[in-house]
Amino acid sequence: MKDLPARRLLLVHAHPDDESINNGATMARYAAEGAHVTLVTCTLGEEGEVIPPALAHLAADRDDTLGPHRVGELAAAMKELGVTDHRFLGGPGRFRDSGMMGTEQNERPGAFWSTPVDEAAAPLVEIIREIRPQILVTYDPDGGYGHPDHIQAHRVATRATELAADPAYGTGAPHTIAKVYWNRAERSVVEEAFAHLRTTAPDAFPGIAAVDDVPGVVDGDEITAEIDGSAYAGAKTAAMRAHATQIAVADEGPFFALSNDLGQPLLTTECYQLVRGVSGAGAGAREDDLFAGVTEAKTATAPEAGAGTDAVRGPASGSASGAGPDSVSGPASASGAGA
Ligand SMILES: [Zn+2]
Image (cartoon, rainbow, N blue to C red; front, side, top):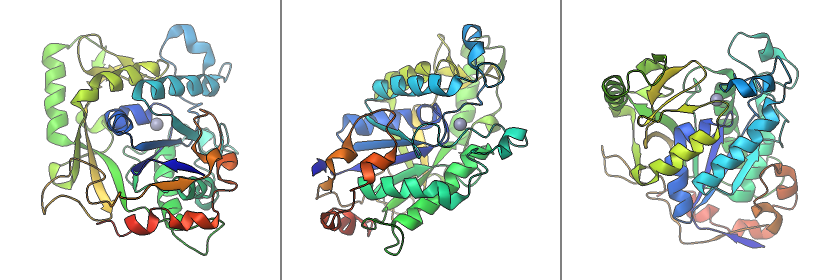
């Protein structure tokens, strides 16, 4: 049995690059602080558009090798963030990128969007029971901006959270995740950052995006936690640059564009909305630590095989023996109450 760090954070994302854009600074911070950070990416992002002309041949309508290429981009990004536990849901390539809403790729066999939620949740339950995270970060029910894979990632993460806690489900000791957060961005902060982009680097990209193009934008009163990632801005920026087929980072400042060539701010203060569990901050105050209020006195035990650092290892090998009787002596009971 191998000990995991006392604090364990799980993030569930749709495609390689989403984690760096949404949570890069948060991931870098907790990795640097010695927490166990686990990223689960649901698809390889095979249907993404490719920005660099020299790599255009990777695209789904040409060589269709973008997925494997993005496995490498994600590994490079995780290196920048200091995150060693990153996995693809069900193993790399198990679920395919579903493309934008309304496209024929949505219904293609094996597409993440067309997979029943419980089927896709099963391998995530195994990971949850292996890692026993106190914190889960994922998208809101709209996936932040309506992409089918992001919506499905929300559904799968939410369902897996329920099933992992259910003693009657599957094998392995049940685990209750103490706190669940949705990714958010604060409207007033985003507006200000767009104004900064317009005045300091108006020509960095062919166009400029709109505030509502930023996933998860909400008014400030919906935000319950704010991670000041300014110390990790460099790591986040480097991680985003590693996703070179998907992201163009400006040289002029904290700005980037996706394949639509529309500039938007690169935010290093990352915001969250607590949707399950008890806030560790006072009434009306924002948490500055996702683990606030979570008991962390005990160290988890997990099987040796489960704590590897293999970039493309699926969860099956790690979780097959993941639930010996000892698992129940882990921190779940201590942290399950949330505060
Ligand atoms: Zn995405």
